[in-house]
Image (cartoon, rainbow, N blue to C red; front, side):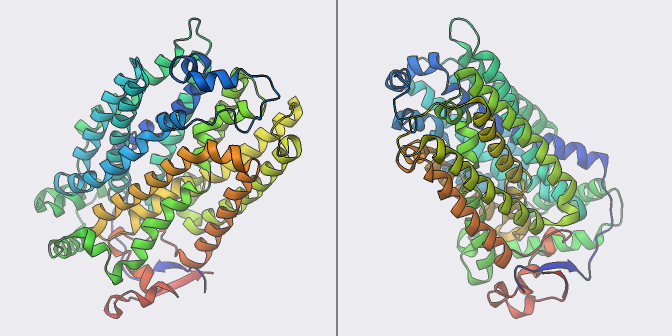
Length: 509
């Protein structure tokens, strides 16, 4: 048996999907808007000549050189990539503090704080007068992203009924894709503003999703899991009845209390996470967000306009191409929403991985044939369309697999006693590799040239094999009963205490 797919033989919690839960999850998932908008807007403004001329004149000067310039290397600038990726270091540090705040004060307070800090960063960027002000603003944005990415996936997984947890959690990724698309559209239209100040509108409008998140967080309820963990037992019982739409919540509530008692015995969640019995969760907390970034998706979404400009598109055409990929990203996410609770996590990850592998290798070959190792070539309209098509095939595969499931799976596999710390670890590893890849992408493009796409394709082969052999199926299993999937896995069961093993029925593989 490889990864394993299981359904629970025993417990099924009563309850249904309520309008209250749907609305609460919709509002909470708006945290994805700030992350998505930030991803989309930064790549767009760094392809705008007025922005480059004011803040990065050396890059602007290199861009204006004749076409014989090596196209792979024209945007290679440490300062430019520092602007684009600096806030991921801030998100990394912030997520460590966010774990404590989320655990002690609740998921809602963490989301509210993240929205306020992101709002400050948006204002600073919109009115930036120099590179220092830009980067300080990016740091504030990063802190906001760190808080929201740590708390929102937890909130969604804890509020959702087990049978619909996948669909509701993926609303976070859907909001990320909507944020990216909106940012791409704003980049496209503001780039045409006479006077060259359109980039200020794009950066400043990041305040809008921040305001939405702040306003929504004020009115959101906290999750029953969080209320129990903070000793508000009766409030938790009442909230559980409300979100499940039934008074018959004793079974689920008893499990919440048991998980809470286990949490109280934990002095340090971080040290506990390192214990042998939590080895499967620790490995997933590291590998899933790390591998998600090694797909190369953030390279495409950060630098889509720059990438298209590099391979020969004009300035406005490159922004339009980024809009196209943004649309594909958003609509493909609906495929995951519609299928994740029917097909399961593993099937989507395996299919998406294979599709991304094919797309990366074809894309690398197309660029190799045209640009070779010199990076000098003219690109025809039909050839450019072929490149965009391959990128869209890649983006669509990511959008219904590693994109949403890279957030969903970690948020649903951790027991309550280590959940906040483990989710912080997920965000830390995600941001570390997002920062590293964003920081070195333009340098790698300059040195590896078309081989960069083969580099990411090789990682996609590795991650697809990892899913096949080591990731068990999690669909339909109550979040507080998730430890049983490890006890019945061919490899992970050696790390799980024998007393915790339970009988599951294998349904696949």
